[in-house]
Image (cartoon, rainbow over all chains, first blue to last red; front, side, top):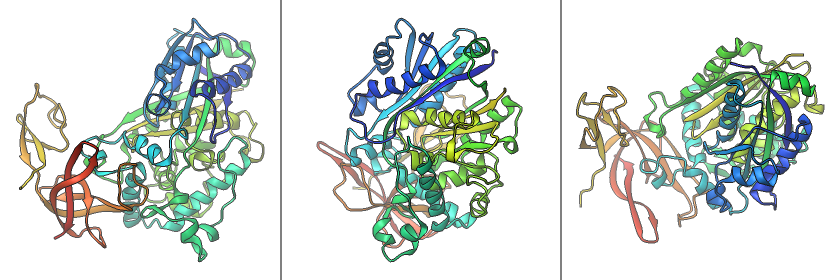
Length: 391
Length: 115
């Protein structure tokens, strides 16, 4: 297997965007192509979950490759729920590692704000089990809420811990110009003050408004290349050293231990094993905080902290910038936003930014090893990646 | 009318599944449709729950109670809750009722109440 490097990155602002889905993808792609200094690619993978349903656009990769005048390069769309982004990176990795392709563009994109909030919630809920979950009105916030209730009961996580994650990540987004939420929040405002219940009502008890990521439009892109090509291009040598993917039961109630996220555990373990790394080696991490509880749970499942102690590490400040393992320093899904198909690629974009030392106010000093966890379904399809700066 | 929701029992090893799957998760040996249907029990205890305030577009109610119930045979299922003040571990009993209405379709599922 050949080594695979990230030679270029690009991103759009995550917000409400009044452009066609393929144009949002193309904008991020052009930034990545320019960043890498390439104008031709062998293959394009486009990660997207809802184009057909939300934007009346099928065969998105064919549209994107032509918008960029990259024809006749190969192109394919990858729909893998909220883990589409990292699944597309995995496909691009395999294409380069196998020797089939030397330059691959991976772009993730979503345009969710074309529909109203109720329809967007329903769209994401269609990833749940159609008979055993969806017909009951289950939404992703509902799944996360039921998971949170058990986590609180077992491990002593409180609404304050959840709010602390929200404050940490949303305020981190203030250091990221591409992030959706550019509004500072405080524990006082969302939890302690008499107005907190008005500012921050329940969306699915015990989760509140500020425990959930926003609904965003946006795109993110990376260019994957062989070692030979990476050295020729002369960009910082950042290698994808580990790739892990795992699945779990479609219906959440079938999991033997309902607070376990076994797919997260296995995907992370496989990625670390492939890379020859351990969780202790990671300098900066992107976890999939679609809901605040998920950052806490994933920080345990991927091996940063012992089971049931993620919220204690949060209390000690270990997951903040300057802490032992800074998590979601660019805002995470909570602050940066969550255009579902784009998120896995946006996580890689943040890690490459960090390993290049281009993080500005959010830079983790001396970061050499990065980690991403892209969480699809309610934990039923998870992709973890490790990144290493080599030069 | 007494409606049921069915579990799927592997004809080879007897393992019960809900929802339906094509291949048994235990023995993984099935040929096509080698499952018997068995009604799910309706009594159990509440494993976890929530009350949802932002519902998908089709729902014309302000909030909806949802929970996962551990049934008396050890299987689990998700259902709607018609319970004012749910508590983890409380005994519940379900009935099969309409849980979602679309223009031309009624969808039936389990609605749990305190037992």
